[in-house]
Image 1 (spheres, rainbow, N blue to C red):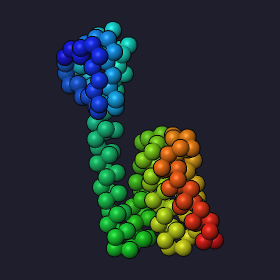
Image 2 (spheres, helix red, strand yellow):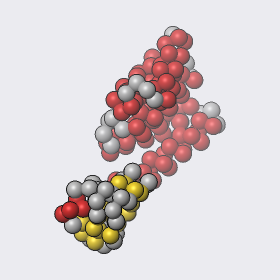
Image 3 (cartoon, rainbow, N blue to C red):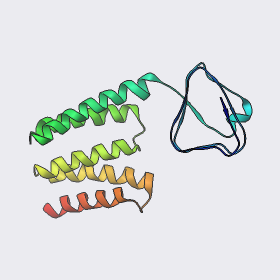
Length: 162
């Protein structure tokens, strides 16, 4: 596969058992996944940063997280908050073990758990999880992002309820 001059790919690229050659100014806005059998010439390595595909990390664990998160959402809809908390805590544990603690998904999960604790009146636990979410989001986004606003709102509401 030859990526010509000034190519801008707005999304992910997956290269499986092929040879990749990049000309000048190739931009891939998301991620570039490669299989073990993919060959990238030296010049191309200067303009792209490939990620070797790992089935466990890029497929198996996300599927497991998705399944557990769906179960948590199911129990949330049924207003069975204790069961929802159990599933969300499992998701958070797997995500923490798999990803860096400063991962956007981990922040969103902690924020969700904080909101559940807010709904059941456990404000100290709500604050604990909302603070984790805020810290991670501030590290990732800085101060100017909608997720920061959401974290501050949830944290403020929990503090107000005490």
